[in-house]
Amino acid sequence: LDDVTGLPNYRAFVARMVEEVSRATRYGVPLSVLLADIDQFEDYAMRLGPETGDEIIRTVARLLQSKVRAVDTVARYGTKQFGIILPHTEQEGATLLAERLCRAIEAGPWSFGELTASFGVTTVTSSNDDGKTCIAQAYRAMRHSALTGKNRVTHARASAIERVVPWGEVPAVRIMDSLGALASLELSSENGERPDSGDDSNGSRAGDKFSF
Image 1 (spheres, helix red, strand yellow):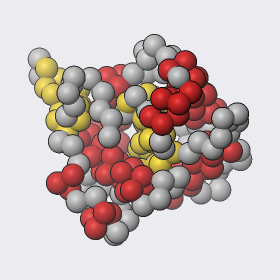
Image 2: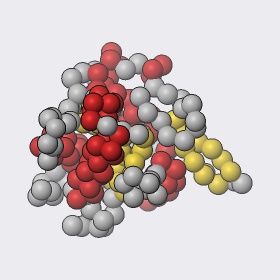
Image 3: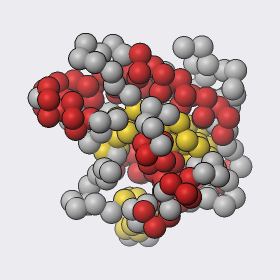
């Protein structure tokens, strides 16, 4: 678990991601993934101190956990990034949830000023039915949100992404095979640990399902 938030850490998120993509493709059920990046987090951490930075991370973690189902997985994906795995969730439902999470983070509670986050969303299809492609697409969509104004949501299928975040600017994604089993999925980073630029428990999620 992550020491600051108590959430699953990057490696646990990756392991769950591999499992859920395999399950979704095997049984033909929908699966979506969100990545969220806290906007200008480094500025807040430098200005307010590391303790306040950690409290921001914990507060965002609690907020995200409070808005998802028990079957969903919220993890600390990077220093200022979170990942959310959404089983039984189509594109429309995942995008709607990301929009609501985006607005919830903006609403606070923040005593030091405004805090926002940029979201990327991807949905498993026949063209991206492996973990590394899903992560890369969500990362790319998240970067698109961050580079086009922040505090917004981009789905990986948005046609404008290529003009803003070419594939060549997306960190390489690898699936590591250990003893014949898919063991980890990593974006390239200096330490190889976490990348940074990081209710109904069974039913499908639809656009009108949430009441936050």
